[in-house]
Amino acid sequence: MADLKSYPVWDAGTRWFHWINVLCVLALMGVGLVILNASSLDVSNAGKIKIKTIHAWIGYVFCINLIWRFIWAFLGNRYAKLRAVLPGGKGYFHALRNYVVAFFSGHPEQYIGHNPVRTTGSRRAVSPDHPSGSHGVGAGGHRFISPAFRALDSAVGGCTGYRARYGSPLCTGHV
Figure 1 (cartoon, one colour):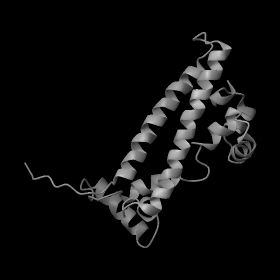
Figure 2 (tube, helix red, strand yellow; figure 1 turned 135 degrees about the vertical axis):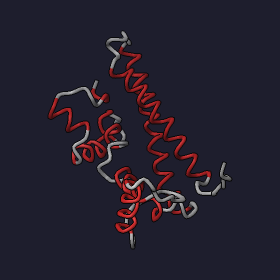
Figure 3 (cartoon, rainbow, N blue to C red; figure 1 turned 90 degrees about the horizontal axis):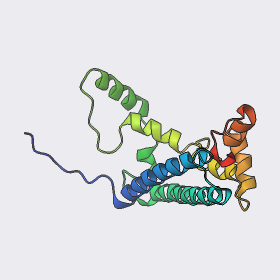
């Protein structure tokens, strides 16, 4: 068996972000499913309000965690920096092409940190039209920040706009 070698790539700030993110996403999905099926589960009106409040607070933790990751992109090690996470820069498309060709030939190039395909996914995750925070806060009716987020949500075609167009309870903030 070949000797394994350890490479210190992901620092503590990046690892904490990812684990908090995983826990928030799972919790938001679980609580969101309860909200979506509240009638079937015979949840009282007071219970629905409490569940939605819990869902909102988990969403706030999720959004604060995303803000932390953005800050950490300037403070973390070289693998946590925006330059290493987002696509682009000199030689990016050449590296992307080489990676894809090598992958489909059965001999993918090994990278320390993100490979070029993964950085393309990172661009999508941090784009302004990503639904993670604006849709939940905008659709949830949180009075102290809701008007601004509703405007953003509608501008990017989020839950508020989706419900208006299709009438679906998919965006559980309206259920």
